[in-house]
Amino acid sequence: MNCPVSALILRLPTHAGRYLVRLGVGLCALLLCLNAAGLPLQAQAPASPSDTLSTPGYLLAAADAAVQEKNYPQAAAYYGQAVRLAPEHAALCYNLGTCYLHAGQRGLAVVWLMRARALSPHSRAVLQNLELARTSRGSAGALTSINNPWQGFYSLLRPNGWALAALLTFTASLAGLYFFLTAQHKRGRKGGFYLLCAALSLSVLAFVAMQSNLSALKPQDMALITVPRTALKSEPSPSASDLGYLTDGTEVHLLGAKPQGGYLLAEAAGQGKGWIATAHLLRPFPYPAKP
Image (cartoon, rainbow, N blue to C red; front, side):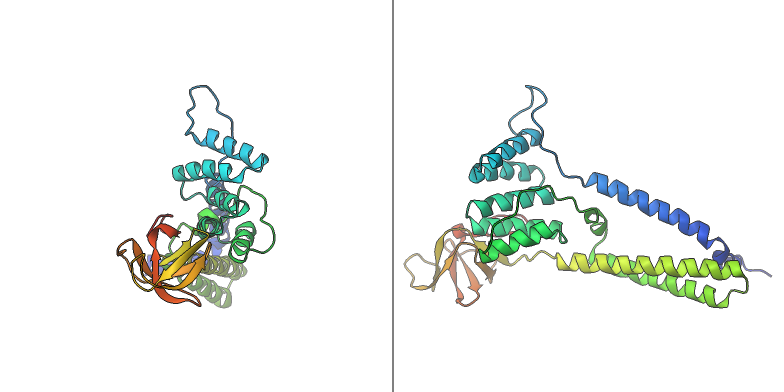
């Protein structure tokens, strides 16, 4: 008696080419949809007098005008209002961080450029300006709209989900190899070969997506100094002795979850542990805010 499952498996190599073409068309359509959905906001003038001063179009147009006049603090103010409407928009975070970098506010620049990196980990512009903000060397790149076509695809699953997808597609590639080696007919071997190549390619893509998501993990226990200079105190009190001084843009590791007397215990590289005023700190994640 013929088993339906066995018959389906035996017929798979014969129809693999047809199935793979359909799968490829579907994936292309999905990527195009994700790419279209992830297009950056375009700066537009208000369409009518009814547009308020808080609309994205007005804010972006005003920010662009301020950038043209090299009034970066004013541009940062407009981008700051726009990013509140779309806090997960990579281009807005990048433009806001770059404006802060041009304005000389390194701490705020690093905060927003780190968010842009988490949202668009493969953008060279983000990585370049983030490095400049951290080292204060060179000149900041121009403001731009970041459109990473893979960003929406990578964010479809969490790292664990991409790891499972890589495992499943790799298993499918082994099945394709089996059909390629054992099929008695030319069509069967051809179908097994196509299945092997397609599944192995998808497995590599899933692995790359998993690595990308892992590299963009958001550190919840990190903060940055956002004032020109602040003291590292021995106790959570303004009258406590100073252990050292930290400058704008310095990254610190938060050791406590709750402030004490307006201070938070933190550790800075080369300075050791101490208490820092919460008013002088800003956390990039989960959303830029005081600890």
